[in-house]
Length: 178
Image (cartoon, rainbow, N blue to C red; front, side):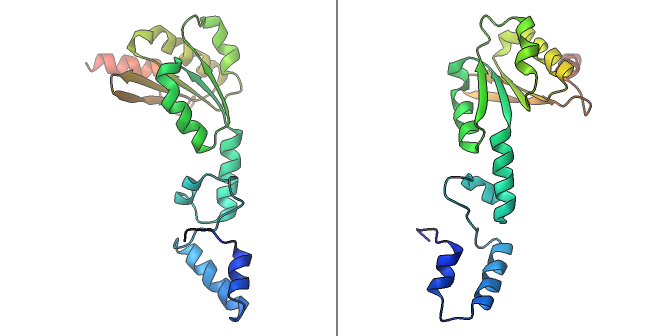
């Protein structure tokens, strides 16, 4: 459909049919994934329809995304695409910190209370990665590390404190296997 009619509009447009039967059929089409029930326009990103056909589930996911507090460590020119993607995904609370001039002592305060820290810098910033790793471990917060290399981005590792290896462990392992 070009337009997204509301459920009530569909029911009123099919008033000559038994409403209970139309409701039942609509529910079955939604459960089968053939229709996606849409909440108020603009409140839920469209891509959440890939995760669930249930309007309440999508609304809850959108609310969780809107509450995510993200810290992005990286230069503006290298993080512009990621910033756009994060914003279109529904994450509205994002702070970007340029690594130039960033001091190790600044990181604990920046990392505290974040749901995710993304460190997106090129390979020359290895000390910064270690600083972010330490700050995230101390704050028990997750971190995602990515490297820009020309036209490519190398994503990973993800550090989940208490659930797997941290960045330093991963780095030592990568160097030992090289």
